[in-house]
Image (tube, rainbow over all chains, first blue to last red; front, side, top):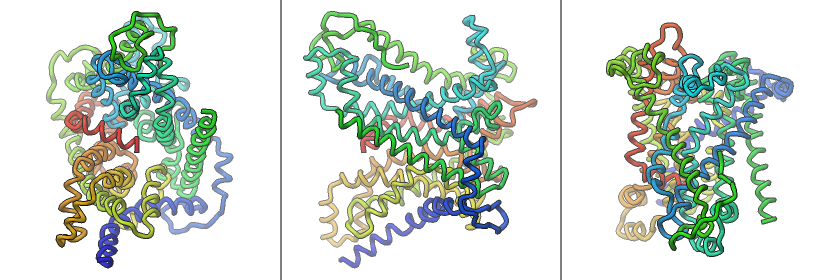
Length: 303
Length: 299
C-alpha cells in the first residue's frame, strides 16, 4: 500500500513537473546567469563579465525613460481601475433599493454584471487595434466626436503626441481591466457578513459612510491583492503597446521596459544585456510587492 | 471617476429591508448620479464592440467618410476576404489547434498535480506547491530569452506541439493554484471507500475525483482558454513561421501593414472573427466564470 502510494504520487507528478522545470524554472534561472555574460546570441561565445551589464544599465537613459513610463502606468492605472471597479461593484451588489438586508444591487444589476465584463474578455491585441483606429487623427472616432460636439480645438493626433500618447494608452488599459476587478470585488462584497450592514443602516450611516468605514476596510485584502496583481501587469504592458505604438511611440515617449528588452534581444541580439534588463525589472517587481505589503502592515496596526 | 462625495441631500426613509447603503439618509441625487455612471460605463463597454461589428460590414471608403452611421450596404464579402486573402482563416485555425490542445493538456496535468498536492502527504509537497505558485508572480519576459533557446535546442521552434507545451507549462501555476484548493473541498470518504473495494489510487482519481471536480475544472479551463487565446508575447517569439501564426500575431501584423494599400474593412472583419469565440464562450458560461473568478480571488 505504502509503496503503491509513492509510485502513484511520482507517476502523477513526473510529466507536469518535468514540463514546468524545462520551460518555466530553467529559463528563469538561466536568465540570471545570462545577464552576467556578454552573449550576443547565435554564436556559442559567451564570456562571464560579472555585473558589467548592470553597470551599463545604470547609465542607460533609454532604460530609465522606459522605466519611468512603467512607473507612470503603475501609479495611474491600478488606482483608477480599482476605484472604478469598486464603485461599479458597490452599485451593483450593495447599493440597491430592493433585496435582502445589506444586499442587492440597483435596478438592472444583472445586466450590468454581464456587460461590464465584455472588455475584459476582448483579447488585448484586438482592443489595441480597435483603439488605434479610435485615436486615428483623420478618421478616428474620438476626433470625429470632438468635432461633432464643437470641441474641434481638442482634436489632435492622440497617439502621435508626446504628451497624450501614454495617457491614451492608459485609458485603454483601464477600459480593459476594470471588468475583471469588478467581478472580483462583486463576489468579495457578496461574501461580506450582512449583520454589519444592518447595523450600519440602523445607526443611520449613509451610503458613502458605509462604503468608507465598512465596505472598504473589509475588502482590504481583496483590494491589496488586486493592486499587486495589476501592478505586476503594469510592469509588462507589452502586448497593448506593441500593437498600438510598435516603435515606442512619438520620440519613444511610450516605450516600456518589456519593449526595450524585446528589441535588445530579438532585434539587436544583445541577449546578455536584455536578460539584465529582465532581472532588474523583476527585482523592482519584488520591491513593489514588499512595499505594498509593508505599507499595509503599518496601516493595519493603526486599525 | 470615483465615488461621488457630495454632501448627501436629506430624503425620506425608504421601506424596511433597504440594503446597507444607508436607508435613513440615502441621498436620492447621489443615487441617480451613480446610476447615470453605471449607464455611461455600460455604454463604454458595449459601443466600441458594436461599432467594430458595424464597421466590419462597411466598405473602406465608408469607414473613413461615415465612421458613425450604419453601413449603407452590408458588405458580407469583407468576411470572406478576411478569412481567405488576409489569412485570418489560417490564423484562426492555428489558434484553435494550439489553444484547445494546450487547455486540454493543462487541465489534465494540472488536475493530476493538484489532486496529489491536495490529497496526499509526502516530503517535498510544500516545496513543489510553492515553486509552482511562484510561477504566477514572475514576469514572463524575464524568461523570454532563455526560453527561446530552450525551445530552439529541443527543436520545437515554429511547431504547434512546441507552443502547446510552452502554453501548458505557463498555464500550470494558475491551474494548480485554483484546483488544489478545489480538490481540498471535496469529500475524501468516497475515495477511501473505493480503495477498500480494491480501487487503485489512479482509478480513484479518474473514476471518482475527476468527475466530482468537474465544475472547478470547467471554470478554470475557460479562464485558461481566455488567457491563452489572448497570448501574444510567447507566439511572437516562438512562432515565427508566418504559416503558423496564431490569431493575435496575425492581426497585429495585419494592422502594422496597414499603410498605403490598406484593407481596413477586412481587418475589422478579422477582428470580429477573432472576438466571436471568446464572446460566445463568455456569454455561454458567464455565471460560472464569475463564480470562478470570485472564488479564486478570495483564495
